[in-house]
Image: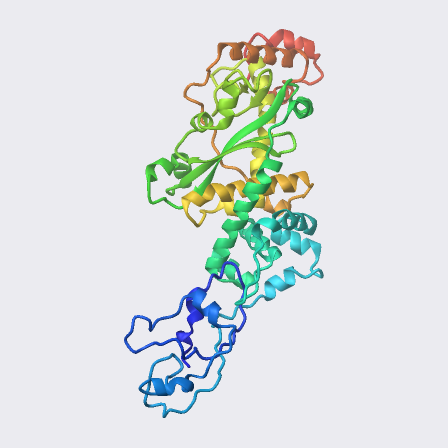
Length: 466
């Protein structure tokens, strides 16, 4: 029998199942299929499932009702000689793929270091993910094939995000079809974003804000800081629509290669855990415009971040709740000292984004897939980053990634007169309390044995000597 005539070949949904052979008996003689008839096609899946469990009658029993005996595919044929057909096996034809790699990494005998190198997390964290996502991604076995296990589904997604390898490589590693791997990545990423983002990406409440502000105070000496903010770019393949909107001029000029990107704006706590993200705006937009599109901007303007500060880089504007460095020329000693401390806080967010991109290598490469799917994938990477940070997962130093985001000064850099006075007061207090300015001294080769009050008296009202 020609295997291509098997009715099961048109009913694959390889994203949900692995395969095994199915044994069939000949089609029942009570289903009349005449040559040239429109019914001489593959049967619908519900018809096959309806008749397959039942014992079928040999087609020769009704040979007297037709012009001659029927062949295996139900078509009348006089060449068969009228002999009764015998029961035979009908198989499900699938491509044989090796699963040796996945079987090895799924084995409990695999060293922990090798597992962590492949999946960027320990086995304990991986098991935690499988337990959290099991109800959302699990599928049931059917009569045709067994479902892909939850562990393998999650592993396909995590390995793809961690390595950024093409889907054809993922397919070979796990012994699954390319389209299957693509569907699994999107399904698991959607489950991660839907189920785990509300649990892991949380804005600090009043009690948590006090702890966060205290820890940022240890870093900078500036009170009431509850977040460090940064915006990074993720490279993408040139989209088919609105190409100019995603064109990244700065990356194109630096790399001497046409670049397109989308943005991720994020706020982190002192531990580098994201507490707010805004994902997916085109790469041509500067940081201040991305901020204006975010929910954080609406929250701040509504007074929900009152009496607290978010610290950002020079690309963000100075606002009543957003603290940024001085960007004008000829800064005073006090302003330099302030920028030094604000830079320490801003680096917390930059370091968090560096770990995010270093741990999930797919963010470093031009991502395959539809533009509409990217926010889900990027959101899943943020959630996985937070889970790893909160569970104390250390990152291999070999995965270190250097950010190349350029801080461009915002067009409307000052949007609050009250914020200007508040920033000047903070800068004055930092210098007079001795919490800032020492790096400026070292940079300008001042004698560190000189009494600090004397330096304040000489330089705090003047400009930095270079």
